[in-house]
Image (cartoon, rainbow, N blue to C red; front, side, top):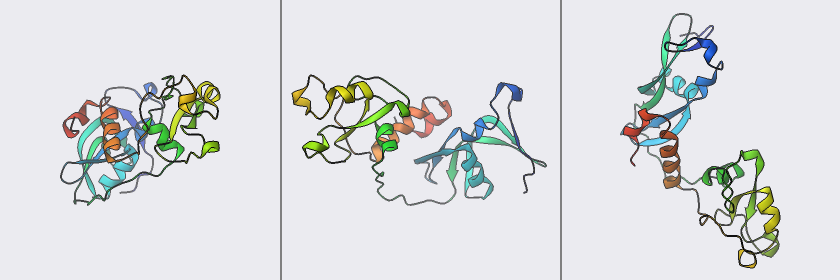
Length: 192
């Protein structure tokens, strides 16, 4: 199937109400063949997997993808047709993953900010032998990072909201649950 010109249109609404192309980036829950949630991808990637015959749509999100000869609904949940063994996953230590783990929240004052407004703080400062590890890095706003400086927590009045931990599979599932709260169609596939 060759897509010459595609446009998106929400069911029962005009295209003026939507930002063009935005539904293609909506999150889609990816299930293994056993219905176990394993990932979240963009609707655009989900459509490719469905068209390639690698996955099938379990739930739809209410938008259509119109091509020259076909119109298909965008998926909200897809399921892989063949079971994929998922090895024990560890996430790379990166700024993006630290902010994702901490939900873009300063771990000292609790302020929720855009990722560009946050810094990473070494709980045990590097100048005092602290390493760049999951357990020593937290999301931090600029004022709190400046206030803490290169001091240890015991030398300040500041406290962590929660102990920093490695980003593991349990954390990934927790994030899927949080995102799933905005899409009620995901609820029956996520184990609360």
